[in-house]
Length: 138
Image 1 (cartoon, rainbow, N blue to C red):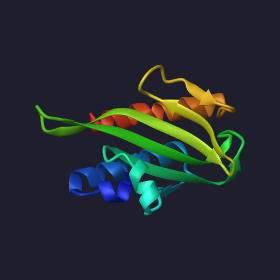
Image 2: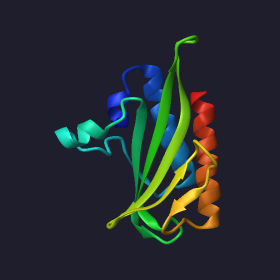
Image 3: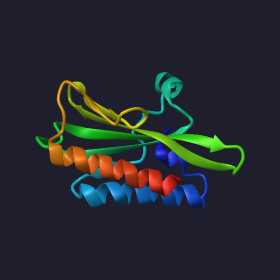
């Protein structure tokens, strides 16, 4: 779900802002998009209400990223015991004008898959960002 729509209270709004700042601390040229999904019926059917989705756009195509836009999806779980929303996984996906180029999922083995991959330094920075997001939410 678009991050802008998930910002329903001060705590979650602050965490979304912190995620943007964490990403920009690693990748200062990126521009955040808190509404990466269109608001149409077809898209609405695909949106996960238990995620916070933030897009990041790079100035032009990036060789180190092997993409132009990045989608960060933070998967959430409502803990019924502590009544908190916790992050249970992140999906980070790189796109260019032809579609998805690579993907990282923290749910299993934190491996990049796709037809291309970012360079080694960028991979390390993305994984560091993911660890920081887990710390923020958990």
